[in-house]
Length: 177
Image (cartoon, rainbow, N blue to C red; front, side, top):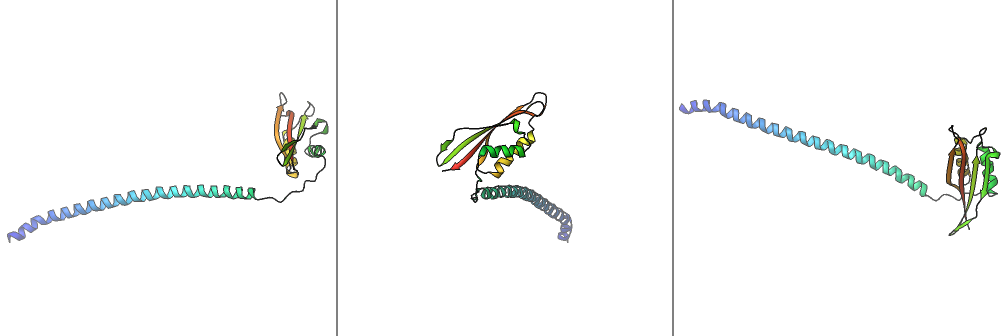
């Protein structure tokens, strides 16, 4: 019977230590799982960032491939480039009296010949050169004739206003020989 009495005294200790060890094991497991979930969350966020970066790079690469594709040759309508520049200036709203074109000597660059044209637009107090008309002029010239590209642009603002007093544009026409 003494043994049965000792079991009763030992029984609460045994339950206490069992519950204590079980609690520590559960707490350690919960802590481990919480840390793993945090690590998985940060890994997921990093993967999302990498995915967005790859998507952005993929679109840039696709644009580059589109631009690098060989374009079909565009027929240059020919004609005098100075007269063409004059027509485009008039269409852009630049008066002819403000428009002064000059042709520079051609330069041979390998199989290409580069001919430079300098266009000077001088505004007056009564008729300043507007920025939008200059932008329209450049876009119209480069869009219609791909062989002519703007090379230099120099702007001089009229004192006391946001308008342009003088604009010097250099266009280059490239022709293959």
